[in-house]
Image (tube, rainbow, N blue to C red; front, side, top):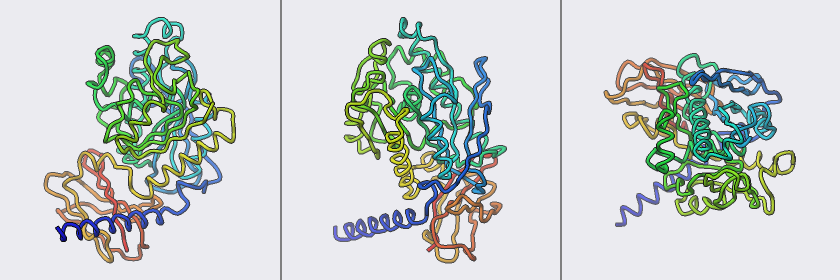
Length: 405
């Protein structure tokens, strides 16, 4: 028993030391606006499926040379029948501010429905939302496909955050917290299966639509128990007098659309009961999206989200896609390392090269994989956090964190 307790103490101490080291290694990037200007690439086509051309705008820090940058995808509000990637001031402000912090950000368009039909036909309303959900997932896959092929935007495919404002947040909160079609009601199961199934039919197939964290600005869930024990981290904002996206559980748009929707007041208890890593900010007495047009409240949203994601980035609390699905055969030793480190790959993995990337996202060394163990000499590399990115023959990749003392 004493041996087990001693081992647990050592483990906890090592974990705390790692988190402190990682937090110190991030510097100002991802928290402060270290870039003065943002470069916007407009009208990038991310899908031509379903006879619809869907576009997004990409925001990047001007002059940034980092090789792998975290990505934030945001979707606009408009009750799923209005709005666009250029019309939501909150989304545009957040895209610009996070790009200045060193992120790549994107504002997306998605398919919209007809307002009158949504009011009259609940099945039509559900179909409209699920089509938008399909499009949102395709946008995630678009960036992972780009990372594996042309690498135009130099994003880290294992560090993608998404969310939005109002309807856009409803879109991505379902994307991150609904784990299977079986969780949905029979009616929703039928509709989603008619529209491409769980991943949708909006293209960019063959790449993951998994997210690592959520930015929820006045979004809601059909059922609050979609939040479970393994739910991903989130930062949430809502007014407690919101009736457009009900703060509790009710019909949205002040009851006009007959589809159940539950806001932060309903699923906050599920966050807490399941120990989900999250931050929730409630605006007392405020209705829907009180930050729209209010500088002070939007600044609260922006800085709270920035601090939350900074902590996730710098303490390694966001689990990567590869950590979850495919990296069991990859190990690094010693870690932390002093002079040399070895990357061991089992025979079951098919990797072609490994890249060593520093805390700013700069590629510092790359080696072809010719045997089960690849060794890196530290050389003149500074102390701190690094990422080993292992690339497969098909272009997909796995990342592992490592530290040089």
